[in-house]
Amino acid sequence: MQKDRWSGASGSIRQRVAHRSRAEESQAREKLEDDRVKRCFR
Image (cartoon, rainbow, N blue to C red):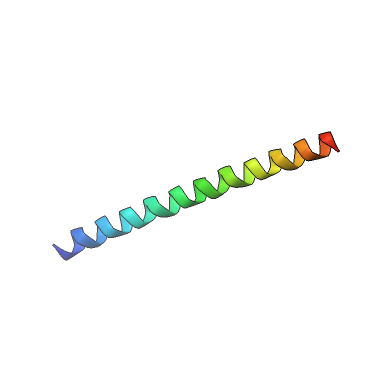
């Protein structure tokens, strides 16, 4: 019982971490694109 509960908790945490890293990745990409646009328009 406890083992199953732990595996489920670790799985959800892993999913959360993956989701967070994906969000940060998209944010960084958007920032890079914004910088590029600003350079072009300067």
